[in-house]
Length: 578
Image (cartoon, rainbow, N blue to C red; front, side, top):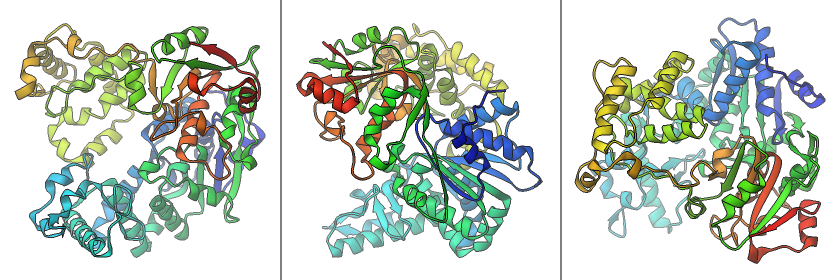
Protein backbone atom coordinates (compact mmCIF):
# COMPACT_ATOMS: atom_id res chain seq x y z
CA UNK A 1 0.00 0.00 0.00
CA UNK A 2 1.25 3.48 -0.87
CA UNK A 3 2.26 5.68 2.07
CA UNK A 4 0.14 8.76 2.74
CA UNK A 5 1.26 11.40 5.23
CA UNK A 6 -1.78 12.91 6.96
CA UNK A 7 -1.03 16.54 7.78
CA UNK A 8 -3.46 18.89 9.57
CA UNK A 9 -4.59 20.37 6.24
CA UNK A 10 -5.13 16.95 4.68
CA UNK A 11 -7.02 15.74 7.75
CA UNK A 12 -9.41 18.69 7.53
CA UNK A 13 -10.08 17.77 3.90
CA UNK A 14 -10.55 14.06 4.67
CA UNK A 15 -13.07 14.91 7.42
CA UNK A 16 -15.01 17.49 5.41
CA UNK A 17 -18.49 16.80 4.03
CA UNK A 18 -21.20 18.86 2.34
CA UNK A 19 -20.23 21.61 -0.11
CA UNK A 20 -16.44 21.80 0.04
CA UNK A 21 -14.00 23.84 -2.06
CA UNK A 22 -10.26 23.25 -1.76
CA UNK A 23 -7.55 25.57 -3.09
CA UNK A 24 -4.53 23.25 -3.36
CA UNK A 25 -1.08 24.56 -4.29
CA UNK A 26 1.33 22.75 -6.65
CA UNK A 27 2.89 19.67 -5.05
CA UNK A 28 0.42 19.58 -2.16
CA UNK A 29 -0.66 16.05 -3.01
CA UNK A 30 -4.10 17.12 -4.17
CA UNK A 31 -4.77 14.11 -6.40
CA UNK A 32 -3.29 11.69 -3.86
CA UNK A 33 -5.56 13.21 -1.18
CA UNK A 34 -8.59 12.77 -3.44
CA UNK A 35 -7.70 9.10 -4.02
CA UNK A 36 -7.20 8.54 -0.28
CA UNK A 37 -10.53 10.15 0.53
CA UNK A 38 -12.18 7.94 -2.08
CA UNK A 39 -10.68 4.94 -0.31
CA UNK A 40 -12.11 6.13 3.03
CA UNK A 41 -15.55 6.88 1.60
CA UNK A 42 -15.87 3.55 -0.19
CA UNK A 43 -14.74 1.50 2.83
CA UNK A 44 -17.96 2.41 4.66
CA UNK A 45 -20.32 3.00 1.74
CA UNK A 46 -23.77 1.51 2.46
CA UNK A 47 -25.67 2.27 -0.75
CA UNK A 48 -25.94 -0.60 -3.23
CA UNK A 49 -27.13 1.33 -6.29
CA UNK A 50 -25.89 4.82 -5.46
CA UNK A 51 -22.22 5.78 -5.60
CA UNK A 52 -19.45 8.34 -5.50
CA UNK A 53 -18.52 10.05 -8.78
CA UNK A 54 -15.04 11.54 -9.02
CA UNK A 55 -14.64 13.55 -12.21
CA UNK A 56 -11.76 15.56 -13.60
CA UNK A 57 -11.03 17.82 -16.52
CA UNK A 58 -8.56 15.59 -18.37
CA UNK A 59 -7.98 11.90 -19.02
CA UNK A 60 -4.49 12.29 -17.53
CA UNK A 61 -5.92 13.46 -14.18
CA UNK A 62 -8.65 10.80 -14.27
CA UNK A 63 -6.09 8.04 -14.87
CA UNK A 64 -3.88 9.33 -12.06
CA UNK A 65 -6.77 9.13 -9.58
CA UNK A 66 -7.51 5.56 -10.70
CA UNK A 67 -3.86 4.57 -10.35
CA UNK A 68 -3.45 6.08 -6.90
CA UNK A 69 -6.71 4.50 -5.68
CA UNK A 70 -5.36 1.14 -6.88
CA UNK A 71 -2.07 1.80 -5.07
CA UNK A 72 -3.98 2.42 -1.83
CA UNK A 73 -6.43 -0.47 -2.07
CA UNK A 74 -5.13 -3.02 -4.57
CA UNK A 75 -8.52 -2.73 -6.30
CA UNK A 76 -10.06 -0.75 -9.15
CA UNK A 77 -13.06 1.51 -8.63
CA UNK A 78 -16.22 -0.27 -9.76
CA UNK A 79 -20.02 0.08 -9.81
CA UNK A 80 -21.82 1.90 -8.29
CA UNK A 81 -18.85 4.29 -8.16
CA UNK A 82 -17.24 6.13 -11.06
CA UNK A 83 -14.06 7.96 -12.03
CA UNK A 84 -14.49 9.87 -15.28
CA UNK A 85 -13.80 13.10 -17.12
CA UNK A 86 -16.37 15.83 -16.63
CA UNK A 87 -17.31 15.81 -20.33
CA UNK A 88 -17.78 12.03 -20.37
CA UNK A 89 -19.86 12.19 -17.17
CA UNK A 90 -22.20 14.81 -18.63
CA UNK A 91 -22.46 12.99 -21.96
CA UNK A 92 -23.09 9.59 -20.43
CA UNK A 93 -25.55 10.52 -17.70
CA UNK A 94 -27.36 13.59 -19.04
CA UNK A 95 -27.14 14.41 -22.75
CA UNK A 96 -27.09 11.00 -24.45
CA UNK A 97 -29.80 9.23 -22.41
CA UNK A 98 -32.12 12.25 -22.13
CA UNK A 99 -31.65 13.98 -25.50
CA UNK A 100 -35.18 12.87 -26.51
CA UNK A 101 -36.72 14.97 -23.73
CA UNK A 102 -35.91 18.05 -25.82
CA UNK A 103 -38.12 16.73 -28.62
CA UNK A 104 -35.41 15.25 -30.83
CA UNK A 105 -36.01 11.77 -32.25
CA UNK A 106 -32.54 10.94 -33.54
CA UNK A 107 -30.03 9.12 -31.34
CA UNK A 108 -27.25 11.69 -30.72
CA UNK A 109 -23.59 11.26 -31.62
CA UNK A 110 -20.82 13.40 -30.15
CA UNK A 111 -18.19 14.12 -32.79
CA UNK A 112 -14.47 13.72 -32.24
CA UNK A 113 -13.57 15.57 -35.44
CA UNK A 114 -15.52 18.84 -35.48
CA UNK A 115 -14.35 19.68 -39.01
CA UNK A 116 -16.95 17.19 -40.25
CA UNK A 117 -19.53 19.89 -39.52
CA UNK A 118 -17.96 22.07 -42.21
CA UNK A 119 -18.54 19.43 -44.88
CA UNK A 120 -21.98 18.59 -43.48
CA UNK A 121 -23.25 22.17 -43.91
CA UNK A 122 -26.44 21.91 -45.99
CA UNK A 123 -27.33 24.05 -48.97
CA UNK A 124 -30.09 25.74 -46.94
CA UNK A 125 -27.48 27.69 -44.96
CA UNK A 126 -26.25 29.49 -48.10
CA UNK A 127 -29.14 31.94 -47.88
CA UNK A 128 -27.58 33.63 -44.82
CA UNK A 129 -25.25 36.25 -46.26
CA UNK A 130 -23.15 39.22 -45.22
CA UNK A 131 -22.12 41.53 -48.06
CA UNK A 132 -23.61 39.01 -50.52
CA UNK A 133 -21.26 36.28 -49.29
CA UNK A 134 -22.64 33.13 -47.58
CA UNK A 135 -21.88 33.50 -43.90
CA UNK A 136 -20.90 29.88 -43.42
CA UNK A 137 -17.62 30.50 -45.26
CA UNK A 138 -16.72 33.29 -42.84
CA UNK A 139 -18.04 31.62 -39.69
CA UNK A 140 -17.44 27.90 -40.07
CA UNK A 141 -20.04 25.61 -38.46
CA UNK A 142 -17.30 23.72 -36.59
CA UNK A 143 -16.52 26.85 -34.56
CA UNK A 144 -20.05 27.92 -33.66
CA UNK A 145 -21.09 27.38 -30.01
CA UNK A 146 -24.07 28.22 -27.86
CA UNK A 147 -23.27 30.09 -24.63
CA UNK A 148 -24.98 29.44 -21.30
CA UNK A 149 -27.31 32.40 -21.87
CA UNK A 150 -28.36 31.10 -25.32
CA UNK A 151 -26.27 33.60 -27.31
CA UNK A 152 -24.02 32.38 -30.12
CA UNK A 153 -20.24 32.44 -30.23
CA UNK A 154 -17.68 32.00 -32.97
CA UNK A 155 -14.38 30.50 -31.83
CA UNK A 156 -15.33 31.30 -28.23
CA UNK A 157 -16.19 34.96 -28.81
CA UNK A 158 -19.14 37.07 -29.84
CA UNK A 159 -18.42 38.42 -33.35
CA UNK A 160 -17.93 42.15 -33.70
CA UNK A 161 -20.54 42.99 -36.34
CA UNK A 162 -22.93 45.84 -36.98
CA UNK A 163 -26.47 45.27 -35.71
CA UNK A 164 -27.88 44.19 -39.08
CA UNK A 165 -25.16 41.60 -39.59
CA UNK A 166 -25.43 40.38 -36.00
CA UNK A 167 -29.07 39.52 -36.69
CA UNK A 168 -28.01 37.59 -39.80
CA UNK A 169 -25.31 35.80 -37.78
CA UNK A 170 -27.83 34.82 -35.11
CA UNK A 171 -30.36 33.54 -37.67
CA UNK A 172 -27.60 31.50 -39.34
CA UNK A 173 -26.56 30.00 -35.98
CA UNK A 174 -30.16 29.16 -35.04
CA UNK A 175 -30.67 27.37 -38.37
CA UNK A 176 -27.33 25.56 -38.10
CA UNK A 177 -27.90 24.29 -34.57
CA UNK A 178 -31.49 23.29 -35.38
CA UNK A 179 -30.26 21.16 -38.29
CA UNK A 180 -27.41 19.76 -36.19
CA UNK A 181 -29.60 18.78 -33.25
CA UNK A 182 -32.32 17.31 -35.45
CA UNK A 183 -29.66 15.06 -36.99
CA UNK A 184 -28.21 14.31 -33.55
CA UNK A 185 -24.75 15.61 -34.51
CA UNK A 186 -23.15 17.28 -31.48
CA UNK A 187 -19.88 18.86 -30.42
CA UNK A 188 -18.91 18.53 -26.76
CA UNK A 189 -19.88 22.17 -26.28
CA UNK A 190 -23.34 21.37 -27.73
CA UNK A 191 -23.66 18.50 -25.28
CA UNK A 192 -22.90 20.81 -22.34
CA UNK A 193 -25.45 23.39 -23.47
CA UNK A 194 -28.12 20.73 -24.03
CA UNK A 195 -27.34 19.02 -20.72
CA UNK A 196 -27.97 22.28 -18.87
CA UNK A 197 -31.20 22.75 -20.84
CA UNK A 198 -32.30 19.19 -20.00
CA UNK A 199 -31.70 19.69 -16.27
CA UNK A 200 -33.47 23.04 -16.17
CA UNK A 201 -36.51 21.83 -18.09
CA UNK A 202 -36.62 18.40 -16.45
CA UNK A 203 -35.66 18.68 -12.75
CA UNK A 204 -36.53 15.02 -12.32
CA UNK A 205 -33.41 14.14 -14.30
CA UNK A 206 -31.29 16.20 -11.91
CA UNK A 207 -32.96 14.54 -8.92
CA UNK A 208 -32.37 11.10 -10.42
CA UNK A 209 -28.69 11.83 -11.08
CA UNK A 210 -28.24 13.29 -7.57
CA UNK A 211 -29.62 10.02 -6.23
CA UNK A 212 -27.48 7.86 -8.53
CA UNK A 213 -24.36 9.70 -7.33
CA UNK A 214 -24.80 11.00 -3.78
CA UNK A 215 -21.24 12.27 -3.58
CA UNK A 216 -19.55 14.27 -6.35
CA UNK A 217 -15.85 15.18 -6.37
CA UNK A 218 -14.58 17.47 -9.14
CA UNK A 219 -10.79 17.50 -9.49
CA UNK A 220 -8.98 20.24 -11.49
CA UNK A 221 -12.10 22.33 -10.85
CA UNK A 222 -10.31 25.56 -11.80
CA UNK A 223 -10.65 24.48 -15.45
CA UNK A 224 -14.42 24.00 -15.48
CA UNK A 225 -16.47 26.28 -17.74
CA UNK A 226 -19.44 28.46 -16.88
CA UNK A 227 -21.89 25.88 -18.25
CA UNK A 228 -20.22 23.10 -16.26
CA UNK A 229 -20.52 25.20 -13.08
CA UNK A 230 -24.21 25.79 -13.85
CA UNK A 231 -24.79 22.06 -14.35
CA UNK A 232 -23.21 21.38 -10.94
CA UNK A 233 -25.46 24.07 -9.44
CA UNK A 234 -28.55 22.37 -10.92
CA UNK A 235 -27.56 19.09 -9.26
CA UNK A 236 -27.07 20.87 -5.93
CA UNK A 237 -30.46 22.58 -6.28
CA UNK A 238 -32.05 19.17 -6.84
CA UNK A 239 -30.73 17.24 -3.89
CA UNK A 240 -26.95 16.76 -4.26
CA UNK A 241 -25.69 17.32 -0.70
CA UNK A 242 -22.03 16.34 -0.98
CA UNK A 243 -19.97 18.06 -3.67
CA UNK A 244 -16.29 18.97 -3.66
CA UNK A 245 -14.43 21.33 -5.98
CA UNK A 246 -10.68 20.83 -5.78
CA UNK A 247 -8.16 22.85 -7.77
CA UNK A 248 -5.79 25.78 -8.01
CA UNK A 249 -6.97 28.83 -9.99
CA UNK A 250 -3.32 29.81 -10.54
CA UNK A 251 -2.86 26.64 -12.62
CA UNK A 252 -5.75 27.23 -15.03
CA UNK A 253 -4.39 26.98 -18.59
CA UNK A 254 -7.53 26.21 -20.57
CA UNK A 255 -9.25 29.54 -21.18
CA UNK A 256 -9.24 28.61 -24.87
CA UNK A 257 -11.64 25.82 -23.81
CA UNK A 258 -13.84 28.24 -21.85
CA UNK A 259 -12.23 27.58 -18.44
CA UNK A 260 -13.46 30.04 -15.79
CA UNK A 261 -11.05 30.06 -12.83
CA UNK A 262 -12.80 33.21 -11.59
CA UNK A 263 -15.96 31.18 -10.86
CA UNK A 264 -13.89 28.79 -8.74
CA UNK A 265 -12.41 31.76 -6.87
CA UNK A 266 -15.87 33.27 -6.31
CA UNK A 267 -17.01 30.09 -4.57
CA UNK A 268 -14.03 30.24 -2.18
CA UNK A 269 -15.51 33.51 -0.88
CA UNK A 270 -19.09 32.22 -0.60
CA UNK A 271 -20.48 31.44 2.90
CA UNK A 272 -22.36 28.52 1.30
CA UNK A 273 -19.09 26.64 0.77
CA UNK A 274 -16.61 25.22 3.27
CA UNK A 275 -13.34 26.71 2.02
CA UNK A 276 -10.13 24.75 2.74
CA UNK A 277 -6.55 25.22 1.63
CA UNK A 278 -3.59 22.96 0.99
CA UNK A 279 -0.63 25.33 1.11
CA UNK A 280 2.19 22.90 1.96
CA UNK A 281 4.26 22.04 -1.10
CA UNK A 282 5.76 18.57 -0.74
CA UNK A 283 7.48 18.75 -4.13
CA UNK A 284 9.79 21.74 -4.46
CA UNK A 285 12.45 23.17 -2.13
CA UNK A 286 11.55 26.51 -0.54
CA UNK A 287 13.54 28.87 -2.85
CA UNK A 288 11.68 27.43 -5.85
CA UNK A 289 8.33 27.82 -4.05
CA UNK A 290 9.19 31.45 -3.29
CA UNK A 291 10.22 32.02 -6.91
CA UNK A 292 6.88 30.99 -8.42
CA UNK A 293 4.91 32.61 -5.58
CA UNK A 294 5.59 35.95 -7.28
CA UNK A 295 2.60 35.14 -9.50
CA UNK A 296 0.17 34.73 -6.56
CA UNK A 297 -1.84 37.55 -5.04
CA UNK A 298 -0.35 39.04 -1.88
CA UNK A 299 -3.15 37.60 0.26
CA UNK A 300 -2.39 34.12 -1.15
CA UNK A 301 1.36 34.38 -0.60
CA UNK A 302 1.32 31.76 2.16
CA UNK A 303 2.94 28.71 0.57
CA UNK A 304 5.64 26.78 2.38
CA UNK A 305 7.74 23.72 1.64
CA UNK A 306 8.26 20.46 3.50
CA UNK A 307 11.38 19.69 1.45
CA UNK A 308 14.85 20.18 2.89
CA UNK A 309 16.89 22.80 1.09
CA UNK A 310 19.99 21.89 -0.87
CA UNK A 311 23.48 23.21 -0.12
CA UNK A 312 23.74 25.58 -3.06
CA UNK A 313 21.07 27.78 -4.62
CA UNK A 314 18.56 25.68 -6.59
CA UNK A 315 17.84 28.61 -8.92
CA UNK A 316 20.07 29.23 -11.95
CA UNK A 317 19.96 31.92 -14.62
CA UNK A 318 21.49 31.30 -18.03
CA UNK A 319 21.93 34.50 -20.06
CA UNK A 320 22.11 33.47 -23.70
CA UNK A 321 22.86 35.22 -27.00
CA UNK A 322 21.92 32.29 -29.21
CA UNK A 323 19.79 29.21 -28.61
CA UNK A 324 22.34 26.82 -30.20
CA UNK A 325 24.18 25.73 -27.04
CA UNK A 326 21.34 26.20 -24.56
CA UNK A 327 20.23 22.55 -24.27
CA UNK A 328 23.78 21.21 -23.90
CA UNK A 329 24.52 23.84 -21.22
CA UNK A 330 21.41 22.79 -19.33
CA UNK A 331 22.38 19.12 -19.58
CA UNK A 332 25.70 20.05 -17.95
CA UNK A 333 23.97 21.93 -15.11
CA UNK A 334 21.39 19.21 -14.45
CA UNK A 335 23.69 16.20 -14.88
CA UNK A 336 23.34 15.09 -11.24
CA UNK A 337 19.58 14.72 -11.66
CA UNK A 338 17.69 11.99 -13.51
CA UNK A 339 14.31 13.41 -14.48
CA UNK A 340 14.90 16.67 -16.36
CA UNK A 341 13.10 18.62 -19.10
CA UNK A 342 13.33 21.89 -21.05
CA UNK A 343 10.08 23.87 -21.26
CA UNK A 344 8.95 26.41 -23.84
CA UNK A 345 5.76 28.09 -24.90
CA UNK A 346 4.76 27.64 -28.51
CA UNK A 347 6.03 25.94 -31.66
CA UNK A 348 8.55 28.63 -32.63
CA UNK A 349 10.92 27.84 -29.77
CA UNK A 350 10.37 24.10 -30.29
CA UNK A 351 11.59 24.51 -33.86
CA UNK A 352 14.52 26.75 -32.91
CA UNK A 353 15.63 24.27 -30.24
CA UNK A 354 15.41 21.37 -32.74
CA UNK A 355 12.57 19.66 -30.88
CA UNK A 356 9.61 19.94 -33.25
CA UNK A 357 8.45 16.40 -34.16
CA UNK A 358 8.08 15.38 -37.80
CA UNK A 359 4.32 15.14 -38.30
CA UNK A 360 4.19 14.81 -42.08
CA UNK A 361 1.57 12.15 -42.63
CA UNK A 362 1.93 9.80 -45.61
CA UNK A 363 -1.13 7.64 -44.81
CA UNK A 364 -4.85 8.10 -45.26
CA UNK A 365 -7.13 7.77 -42.25
CA UNK A 366 -8.18 4.20 -43.04
CA UNK A 367 -8.92 3.23 -40.33
CA UNK A 368 -6.34 5.69 -38.93
CA UNK A 369 -2.83 6.78 -39.80
CA UNK A 370 0.09 4.53 -38.71
CA UNK A 371 2.06 7.67 -37.90
CA UNK A 372 0.65 7.16 -34.38
CA UNK A 373 2.63 3.91 -34.11
CA UNK A 374 5.82 5.74 -35.08
CA UNK A 375 5.25 8.37 -32.41
CA UNK A 376 4.42 5.66 -29.84
CA UNK A 377 7.69 3.88 -30.66
CA UNK A 378 9.54 7.15 -30.07
CA UNK A 379 7.69 7.65 -26.76
CA UNK A 380 8.72 4.21 -25.55
CA UNK A 381 12.35 4.63 -26.61
CA UNK A 382 12.49 7.80 -24.49
CA UNK A 383 11.06 6.11 -21.39
CA UNK A 384 7.50 7.36 -21.85
CA UNK A 385 5.82 3.94 -21.87
CA UNK A 386 2.57 5.17 -20.34
CA UNK A 387 2.20 7.87 -23.01
CA UNK A 388 2.95 5.31 -25.73
CA UNK A 389 0.20 2.98 -24.49
CA UNK A 390 -2.33 5.81 -24.22
CA UNK A 391 -1.51 6.99 -27.74
CA UNK A 392 -2.37 3.58 -29.23
CA UNK A 393 -5.12 2.54 -26.80
CA UNK A 394 -7.51 5.24 -28.01
CA UNK A 395 -7.12 3.89 -31.58
CA UNK A 396 -7.71 0.21 -30.76
CA UNK A 397 -11.54 0.27 -31.09
CA UNK A 398 -11.26 1.38 -34.72
CA UNK A 399 -8.56 -1.21 -35.37
CA UNK A 400 -10.92 -3.94 -34.11
CA UNK A 401 -13.98 -2.51 -35.86
CA UNK A 402 -13.41 0.22 -38.51
CA UNK A 403 -17.13 1.13 -38.44
CA UNK A 404 -16.60 2.62 -34.97
CA UNK A 405 -14.79 5.51 -36.63
CA UNK A 406 -18.23 6.86 -37.54
CA UNK A 407 -19.73 5.97 -34.14
CA UNK A 408 -17.91 7.93 -31.41
CA UNK A 409 -20.37 6.80 -28.71
CA UNK A 410 -19.67 3.12 -29.34
CA UNK A 411 -15.96 3.83 -29.52
CA UNK A 412 -16.12 5.58 -26.15
CA UNK A 413 -18.05 2.63 -24.67
CA UNK A 414 -15.33 0.25 -25.88
CA UNK A 415 -12.58 2.34 -24.27
CA UNK A 416 -14.40 2.62 -20.95
CA UNK A 417 -15.22 -1.11 -20.90
CA UNK A 418 -11.57 -2.05 -21.52
CA UNK A 419 -9.89 0.55 -19.32
CA UNK A 420 -8.71 -2.18 -16.91
CA UNK A 421 -8.02 -4.77 -19.61
CA UNK A 422 -4.34 -5.33 -18.89
CA UNK A 423 -4.10 -8.19 -21.37
CA UNK A 424 -5.09 -5.77 -24.14
CA UNK A 425 -2.57 -3.19 -22.92
CA UNK A 426 0.18 -5.81 -22.78
CA UNK A 427 -0.58 -6.58 -26.43
CA UNK A 428 -0.23 -2.89 -27.24
CA UNK A 429 3.23 -2.90 -25.65
CA UNK A 430 4.09 -6.05 -27.62
CA UNK A 431 2.95 -4.35 -30.83
CA UNK A 432 5.01 -1.20 -30.22
CA UNK A 433 8.12 -3.18 -29.31
CA UNK A 434 7.79 -5.38 -32.42
CA UNK A 435 6.95 -2.75 -35.01
CA UNK A 436 8.60 -3.43 -38.36
CA UNK A 437 12.14 -2.07 -38.50
CA UNK A 438 12.52 1.48 -39.71
CA UNK A 439 15.03 0.68 -42.47
CA UNK A 440 12.13 -0.59 -44.60
CA UNK A 441 10.51 1.59 -47.25
CA UNK A 442 7.11 3.13 -46.48
CA UNK A 443 5.49 0.53 -48.79
CA UNK A 444 7.25 -2.42 -47.13
CA UNK A 445 6.71 -1.11 -43.61
CA UNK A 446 2.98 -0.55 -44.20
CA UNK A 447 2.57 -4.08 -45.57
CA UNK A 448 4.35 -5.65 -42.59
CA UNK A 449 2.43 -3.48 -40.11
CA UNK A 450 -0.91 -4.70 -41.49
CA UNK A 451 0.16 -8.31 -40.90
CA UNK A 452 1.63 -7.61 -37.44
CA UNK A 453 -1.60 -6.00 -36.19
CA UNK A 454 -3.62 -8.96 -37.45
CA UNK A 455 -1.40 -11.48 -35.66
CA UNK A 456 -1.02 -9.70 -32.31
CA UNK A 457 -4.71 -8.83 -31.91
CA UNK A 458 -6.08 -12.01 -33.57
CA UNK A 459 -8.04 -9.97 -36.11
CA UNK A 460 -10.19 -11.78 -38.67
CA UNK A 461 -8.41 -9.86 -41.40
CA UNK A 462 -5.55 -7.42 -41.69
CA UNK A 463 -6.28 -3.69 -41.28
CA UNK A 464 -6.07 -1.61 -44.43
CA UNK A 465 -3.44 1.04 -43.76
CA UNK A 466 -3.09 2.83 -47.09
CA UNK A 467 -0.42 5.22 -48.31
CA UNK A 468 -1.56 8.48 -49.85
CA UNK A 469 -1.07 8.86 -53.58
CA UNK A 470 -0.45 11.94 -55.77
CA UNK A 471 2.34 14.15 -54.45
CA UNK A 472 3.14 11.55 -51.77
CA UNK A 473 3.88 8.73 -54.25
CA UNK A 474 7.60 9.60 -54.75
CA UNK A 475 8.14 9.02 -51.00
CA UNK A 476 6.73 5.48 -51.02
CA UNK A 477 10.16 3.97 -51.78
CA UNK A 478 11.96 6.02 -49.13
CA UNK A 479 12.84 4.46 -45.79
CA UNK A 480 10.87 5.16 -42.63
CA UNK A 481 14.04 6.16 -40.76
CA UNK A 482 14.75 8.74 -43.45
CA UNK A 483 11.24 10.18 -43.47
CA UNK A 484 10.52 10.09 -39.73
CA UNK A 485 13.79 10.64 -37.94
CA UNK A 486 13.00 12.73 -34.89
CA UNK A 487 14.92 15.97 -34.33
CA UNK A 488 17.97 16.10 -32.10
CA UNK A 489 16.22 17.42 -28.97
CA UNK A 490 12.80 15.81 -29.49
CA UNK A 491 12.77 14.02 -26.12
CA UNK A 492 14.48 16.84 -24.20
CA UNK A 493 12.18 19.80 -24.92
CA UNK A 494 8.42 20.12 -24.63
CA UNK A 495 5.70 22.71 -24.07
CA UNK A 496 4.39 23.91 -20.71
CA UNK A 497 0.90 22.57 -21.44
CA UNK A 498 2.24 19.03 -21.72
CA UNK A 499 3.80 18.94 -18.24
CA UNK A 500 0.84 20.19 -16.23
CA UNK A 501 0.39 17.84 -13.28
CA UNK A 502 3.88 16.33 -13.67
CA UNK A 503 6.97 16.43 -11.44
CA UNK A 504 10.63 16.67 -12.47
CA UNK A 505 13.95 16.84 -10.62
CA UNK A 506 15.00 19.84 -12.71
CA UNK A 507 13.52 22.02 -15.43
CA UNK A 508 14.84 24.77 -17.66
CA UNK A 509 12.30 27.34 -18.80
CA UNK A 510 13.30 29.24 -21.94
CA UNK A 511 12.12 32.86 -21.99
CA UNK A 512 11.76 35.16 -25.00
CA UNK A 513 13.16 38.71 -25.32
CA UNK A 514 9.68 40.23 -24.97
CA UNK A 515 6.07 39.28 -24.24
CA UNK A 516 4.59 40.08 -27.63
CA UNK A 517 2.00 37.66 -28.97
CA UNK A 518 2.25 34.30 -27.22
CA UNK A 519 5.77 34.96 -25.92
CA UNK A 520 6.59 34.89 -22.22
CA UNK A 521 9.52 36.89 -20.85
CA UNK A 522 10.95 38.55 -17.74
CA UNK A 523 8.44 41.35 -18.39
CA UNK A 524 5.76 38.98 -17.01
CA UNK A 525 7.57 38.52 -13.68
CA UNK A 526 5.46 40.98 -11.69
CA UNK A 527 3.31 40.57 -8.60
CA UNK A 528 -0.32 40.70 -9.81
CA UNK A 529 -2.85 43.06 -8.23
CA UNK A 530 -5.72 40.81 -9.38
CA UNK A 531 -5.94 37.19 -10.46
CA UNK A 532 -3.02 36.73 -12.89
CA UNK A 533 -3.45 36.53 -16.65
CA UNK A 534 -2.77 33.35 -18.60
CA UNK A 535 0.91 34.15 -19.23
CA UNK A 536 1.61 34.48 -15.51
CA UNK A 537 -0.32 31.27 -14.85
CA UNK A 538 1.77 29.59 -17.55
CA UNK A 539 4.96 30.66 -15.77
CA UNK A 540 3.52 29.53 -12.43
CA UNK A 541 2.79 26.05 -13.79
CA UNK A 542 6.22 25.72 -15.43
CA UNK A 543 8.23 26.93 -12.43
CA UNK A 544 6.31 24.71 -9.97
CA UNK A 545 7.27 21.45 -11.73
CA UNK A 546 10.83 20.87 -10.37
CA UNK A 547 11.84 19.40 -7.03
CA UNK A 548 15.45 20.48 -6.77
CA UNK A 549 16.57 22.78 -9.57
CA UNK A 550 14.94 25.61 -11.50
CA UNK A 551 16.86 27.04 -14.46
CA UNK A 552 15.65 30.11 -16.33
CA UNK A 553 17.14 30.84 -19.76
CA UNK A 554 17.04 34.61 -20.34
CA UNK A 555 18.08 36.51 -23.48
CA UNK A 556 21.27 38.51 -22.78
CA UNK A 557 19.58 41.79 -23.70
CA UNK A 558 17.25 41.29 -20.71
CA UNK A 559 20.05 40.75 -18.20
CA UNK A 560 19.18 41.79 -14.65
CA UNK A 561 21.43 43.54 -12.16
CA UNK A 562 22.46 41.65 -9.03
CA UNK A 563 19.98 43.73 -7.05
CA UNK A 564 17.14 42.94 -9.46
CA UNK A 565 17.95 39.21 -9.33
CA UNK A 566 17.83 39.19 -5.52
CA UNK A 567 14.59 41.20 -5.48
CA UNK A 568 12.96 38.89 -8.02
CA UNK A 569 14.05 35.54 -6.54
CA UNK A 570 14.57 36.33 -2.87
CA UNK A 571 18.29 35.45 -2.97
CA UNK A 572 21.13 35.54 -5.48
CA UNK A 573 20.71 32.85 -8.14
CA UNK A 574 23.69 31.13 -9.75
CA UNK A 575 24.43 32.93 -13.02
CA UNK A 576 25.84 31.49 -16.25
CA UNK A 577 26.56 33.26 -19.54
CA UNK A 578 26.75 31.55 -22.94
